[in-house]
Image (tube, rainbow, N blue to C red; front, side):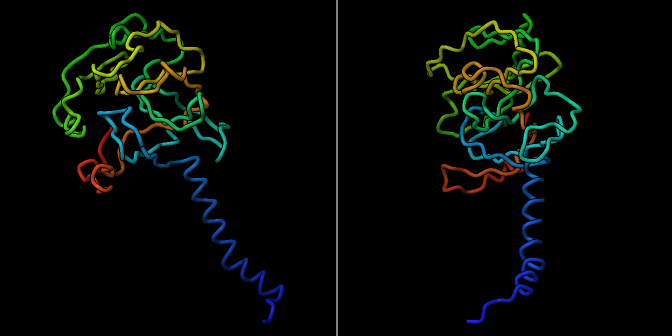
Length: 234
């Protein structure tokens, strides 16, 4: 078999390999620094986000980083109370999705699942039927639902499950250290959040999420859940 000449190899590189390599690098850099989606495998953010959701992650929400690193090129905002953030767990590096409850300097406390931020109790109200209906029918009646509102006007759904043993329903008070954030899952009795893994350093926060792109139903052979496509996350 005739071996390719050096000129042929270089031509193949220029016309085929290099353009593909550049395209892959650009796409990966875009996902690393600009925008991405995140698969949600657990129910820790129910009823806002459920298992099988693919959520949009805006990586430019707070800053611009060098692709594939945590080095900041520019910063224009910081997470606020109520933001849904994607971050790398300070415990084991696994990527998680939770809601910001306390910002640096806040004093956070739970008393039997009632939240206090800076000694002020959160407000609680009734949750709309449509949000409750997003929880799988087989388990819907096992939970208690409501809305929680805290300082800065943040208001979002929360869920509790009285039958689940949880020694973290009462927690703190804890003062959030500088440069860190206290995060919790909306599913208060079934979430490994800052009560278990500690506060999240600012550099570990990847981006903010406010929308479900699409969703697959794990209980029905991964069929699409059309009603959750492009659904806003409260």
